[in-house]
Length: 417
Image 1 (cartoon, rainbow, N blue to C red):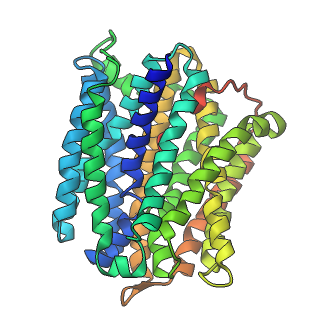
Image 2 (tube, rainbow, N blue to C red; image 1 turned 135 degrees about the vertical axis):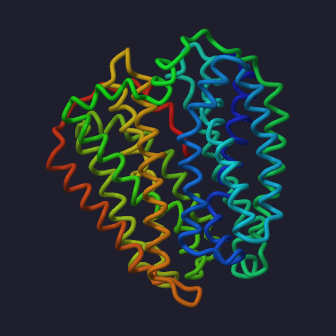
């Protein structure tokens, strides 16, 4: 892979995740403050990510893998996404907002697989080279948060009251148009010959990997993956609204500390797997969610603000130690025949089923502890803290420790920044 191609792929990744991080983080704050959405409505808006994740394999596998170049489909989806982002910018109530965000996420989620596919096809050794390209996606997410908080101050108290967060959709609309047009200049990535019919569809959805559930350890991991995504949804849906509501300054910018820690802890995964084994690494990831929510429950924007910062910084442990290590574990258990299907099954279970339940639960609990436009955040955060702790205990009791060979290959499929 030439340096020019590498640079072009890095720009693609930067824009891909700049777009996602530029509106998804602050959507909860915007909906509550400016569209007067309830917790249930906010949960409904965030659950569009899960529906997008469920539908994505059909779009990628049944269209991109058979009929159209990946870079062309990527361009078309982002141009259509730019139009939908502009429609979100103009939406004035939740009834108008929801259909557009649902349509947008159905189009956006498949692009995560497309940017990976375009990158992999240019690399002789993806396990060695992909991480250096993928990290620019995380940088794009970080830059989006810093722009919102420190360049434009759209998430300041004054900005939120004036509806300035609405501009995030305009910013991401422009970025989506830019990536859509740029995509047509990317290296050609034509479809590769694949089998068609029901068997292919089963592989796309990961259904032929269900045979792995006969292994007790993998079955325990599979169930734990679904369950831990329920408290995970509380962070994505509530964190920005929580921080802005308790008057943390530059909340969106501060949340990028989580992505910075993600990059650092990614480097620690091989060390932890070799030293402590898979069980302890996964368990630390789950316990970190419980610790994070306890820090949110008892921290504040004044003398205990450091607790909030630590909670945000735990994102690297929360995400990398469970989800990235989980991808490695899944890859090691699947064998050659079921590698892709097993990753698809876990993605469908976590970002699809698990987070779909989680967003609904978060919306219900938010409404339970809402009054006069304010929330009892301590009570809200204690729910996912307790649930994550319970899942951790059940996992610790039922999962047997395993040593897993790590060569870096399985860590290259991550979705979120």
